[in-house]
Structures are given as structure tokens and as C-alpha cells.
Picture 1 (spheres, one colour):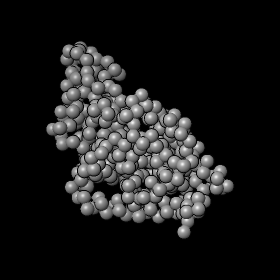
Picture 2: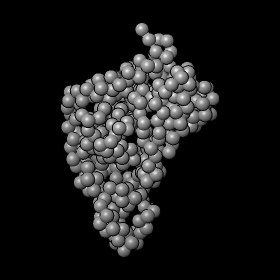
Picture 3: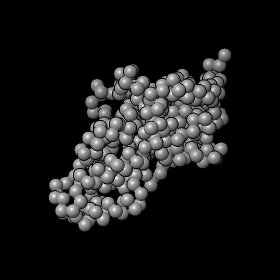
Picture 4: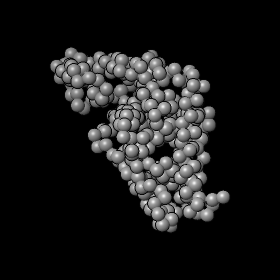
Length: 325
């Protein structure tokens, strides 16, 4: 049985891009009876940028509620908060001592900010090592990642190889990246990649009136109502195409090319599609957000399962390093 591991950082509420690009594909992967899925909320990683503890706790709850809203089977698999399993940080320290400085200095996330080193904290610099610990702690075989994360996965393997060479045996399992080239970049309301940092995202769990305000802001050109329009260059159509049925997409395409159909009409159709397609996930999300004790009990149970696996790996690592009791 292959062990699949993935994490989502708690730096904000999940948006449509997260759901379509990461959450739904990961949940689909977890339904394979040959896979055992370990999904965690990477709340420690969020500390590199988010310092507000109350806000982080709120985001953690929202992320957990989202995974459950879309049907992740927490009983069959393992679902936990990174910060509640201390072995993450213990292994990260051990691996720090096997990680050469140039490897971290070459990491993309660090290089993007290295021109202004005052903005780079030590946590950001060693981020790939904690990420390696997240993966290696659970003997994960398959790591679903985007192309932008492939470098970090390769670093995790390199660090594991260094440790295993010292041990003289494979103590840490070497993971493999699973990159789905079919997953397209999800556009934000301004046409760029949907991202919290661009503030161009769609939060599908917003109340209907607030969600309507967001969809109204979607970028469009100045063509008049009666003019034919190019659906393939329009942001609203692109978003609609990601969630609507084939017949609905074909109908909207025809409306665009025939003319007499405004962008306001398309945005109304997109809003209606979001509300219909995600009606049940929105209901479940709100249920868990309003029933924190039940959500907490699910996470605590998952953390007990995760801790059991993590302690086994840490025991082997401690033994190699001479830290065992």
C-alpha cells in the first residue's frame, strides 16, 4: 500500500484555487483503496508570515472544515495539525544538521526574497527542512505537488539520502513527487493566478451576498451588451468552465459568441453555478465552523494516529544519532 502525504498551509481560508487545484485532486487520490492518505494542516509553516495566533487558529478550523466538507474520509486516513505532533520539529532539527547551507540558499522561496534580507527570517530560510521532516516523518511514498514545489521535494530526498548514508541503511523512506500536468492554473478575479497574496481569490464559503460582491469584481473588457465576445479570453468564462457541466459551458460559449449577452449575465451565471455546485460543501463547512467541539475531536483523534507513526520514525532516528534512552 502506497502512503500519500500532503499538507496545506494555514495562512488563510481555502479559496476556489486551493479547492480545485489541490484539495479535490488529493481527496480523489485518497479514495484509491491501494493508497493510505496522511493529510495535515501545516500551521507551523504559516508562522513564517502570519504572527497572529487567533487568526491562525481560525484559519486552521476553516481548512479542516473544508477538507471534511469535500468528503475526506478522516476515519480511514490520517488528518491532523502539524503543531500538535512535536516530532515534526524534532526531526526538523536533526535534518537541519544534515542540510548544507548552499542547498537552502538555492531554494526558490528564499531566493525570491533574498534581495531584502531584513524580510527573511530563519524560519523562511529553513522552511524546506521542516517540509522535509513533514514528509520523511511518515514514510510517505507519494507527495502530490505543483511544479513550483518539485525543488523542495528533491531537497527532501537529498537530505534523506545524506542521513541514510550515515545510518548505513534506509531509515528514511525516499519520497516521489506526483505532479498532475492536467491541473491548470486557476485564474483569480483579475486574470492572474488565484492567490491570497494577490487578493484576487474567490472564497466559496462566503455568505451569498458577499460572494455576489466578489464575482461582480471579476475583470472584463468594455464590450457592449450586444457585441459578440471571445469566451476564451474572458476571466468569468474561464472560471465558469472549471466548475460547470459540459452543456452549461456550451450554452454560455454560444451566448458569448452570438452577442446580446453581457458580462453581468455571465457573472450571475457563475454565482448561481458556485452556489448550486457547492451547496452541500457550504452546508457542511458551516456546520463544522459552528460546532468546534466536534471538529476538535476529529483533529485530536487524527493527531493520536499521526503521533503513533511519527514516534516510530523518531525512535529509529534517535537510535542512529545516539539520542535513544
